[in-house]
Length: 365
Image (cartoon, rainbow, N blue to C red; front, side, top):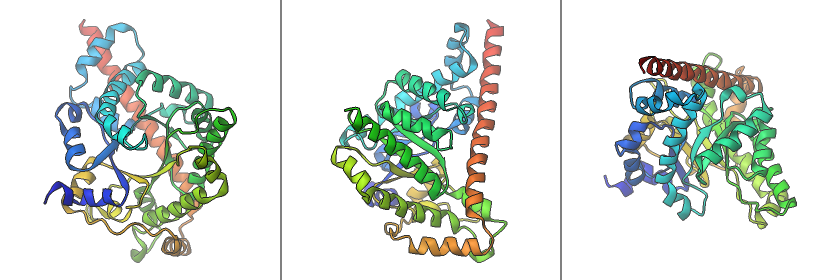
C-alpha cells in the first residue's frame, strides 16, 4: 500500500485535517513526528496535561533540561512550561510549511493553560497571553476550556489576537457557547479596526460519551451516542456559519472556527480501534487521534464517505438514547466537569513528578 492509498490519505482527501494527540521529546528527536507528517498525512498535533504527565514523568528524556533549570530558582510550574514550550516550538517548526501552504488554517500545535485556572477568567487570559508570547510561534494554539468561566476568556483572547483551541466541549450547547465567544471576539476586532483573521478550533470530545452512557443504554444502543453527538454538532456548526451574522464577518476576512473531533480512540479492546475516526470524516474539520489510533488507522482504517450534514440520523440516534434513559444535558455537563477534574489530577501528578526531580537534582548538586 502506497502512502497515497493509505486510509489516512483517504481521510485527508475528504477535507479533514489529521492531527496526532501526543507529543514527547522522543517523538521529536527520533524522527517519528517527521515520519507521521511525510507518510500518514498528519498536519498538526495536540497536547494536554495527561500527555505531558506521561512524557515528562516517566523516563529521563527531560532530565537534562530539568537539571539545567533547577538552579535558576524557577517554580515547578515554570520548569514544566519551559520544557513544554521547547517541545512545542520544535513541533510547530515541523508544521511551519503546512501552516503557510494552508493559508494559516492548518499546521497548528496546542499548549494548554494550567487546568487550575479553569474557574479563573482573568488568570486564564493573563497566562494564555504570556505562554503564547514566550512560545513565539504563530502556529501555536493556546488551549482554554469551554467552561462558563472559560468562554469570557476565549472572547477576550480572540479579541487580543491569540489563536485558541477551545477544549472540553461535549454537547451542541457547549459548542454554541464556544463559537459565540469566538465570534464576539472577532466582532470586537472588526469594531476596533483590527484584522478579523484569528484562528481557532472547537474541540468536541466523543468517546467519553459512550463510556458514560454504557450503563444506561441497552446493547443495541451501545457506542452510538458519541458519533451521533458529532453529527448534531456538525449540523449546528454548518448552520451557524451559514447565518448572516457570520457571513458578514467572513466577507471582512474572518475565518471559521473549525470543529475538532477529540477523544477519538477506543478504550474497550472489543471495539474496532478505528470506530470513531472511520465515521467522522468531514470537510473543514479536524480529527486529533491518539498515536495508537493514528497507527491503527494507517493499517486497518476504512474511512466512510463524508459525514451526513443534515443531522437526521444523528437526531434519531440521540432520541433513542434519550428514550432509553440517557439524560444528555446532564451527562454533557458532568462530562465537562469530570474532564476538568481529570486534567487537574494529571496536572498535580505532573507537578509532583517534576518537583521530585528538581529536588533530587538540587540535593545532588
